[in-house]
Image 1 (cartoon, rainbow, N blue to C red):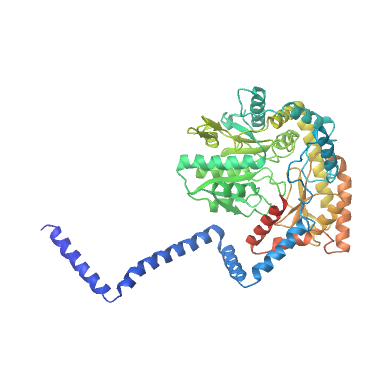
Image 2: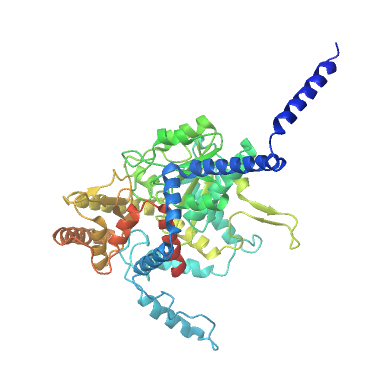
Length: 542
């Protein structure tokens, strides 16, 4: 029997049954129901996606806050309160831009402009030895290493490595800075594969941005990942958030372990078919603690994903600290699984601001960093980093810093700052009201308190001229020790002790202090509101 003789009657019967069933409905309903069903499915899909991206708790809080803001007058009240906080953060109700120039003068000042610049500079707060991080070169800015860097930068102020055929010296400087930095991170070791390569960038953030963008494109080509995701510890730098916003990557931030290190088991739970990269820091910015890079490397190899190591702080300390006998765990390209590294030369490399390095395990990966344009009427174009034109003077300054100091210079400076850090760590530990966050591996010491408000301590320290960094999770403050701090360790510890006792005897915010704001920001459940607050602050500042 022909199969069609069976199928056709069956289809006719199904058609008749369908018509009989649908005849009880209005034609308009039959037309609308599929559309409504489709829209409802899309809404459910969107809700599921939002919950997946933000988590149940954050989604519920955002939904509730959205409803609350619909109440007449609530949004206006929230905006007014946010503005008060913004003005408080700026330490004044007036805009920082009041009195600033808004157009070119009719007649230029000529060389007298230098005098005006000196006058404005003198009004800056004193920073010598008073700031966490910020300035890493020791001594006075008009002599010693400062003077050398300034002269090197001045000599090449007009140069731009975009013009390879003109500024050949700067092109050489960059290549040598990259190569020398790579050698610090194992490029000469067999385990690295011997193909380490990279470029100079404007800072740690650009280095991280490029590493993320490059990895995204590399993994798309290698594994056809079109909806990329990254998994990073809670302590990883905020530059990863910026990179994921820029390059449309889903970011998972995972809580750290009890030692405030990246929790490898927790990170593993978030790895899936769309994961392109995991991240480790050596050390992390908040607490100066090195993540378990070897374990993260094993994870990267097992799942065929990339591992970026953030050495922006540790790059020019850890290799020398290890030589000095400090117990530094593996952190570089000798660790299998590490595919990229970022390291700032303008921190402990003692180079001028605006100099960092991004390195890759091989050229196959780095090629995805470049942008080549073939159809522009301006000609064929290719650029290695985010910027097209780049200042050659800071590249020259970085080269001058590294060549002038050499291995011995960095060893000596590392010895000084590591010893100063240990003294500060012990001094803070000896204050009964304070605790050290984790076990710092390097030159960052973070401390908090279970008995007093640590942000109030920070406010008192600010009145004494110190500029430390407030942290959260847990509430704490840290000092990133540089050569500027070596001569003032005792002064800092004395002021820290005095500040703790002041807060203990007279708890409560001081006039003009920011402790209430930092404390409140950490407790606000609606993180979207905190986000808006930060954006408003920045919009009123820059």
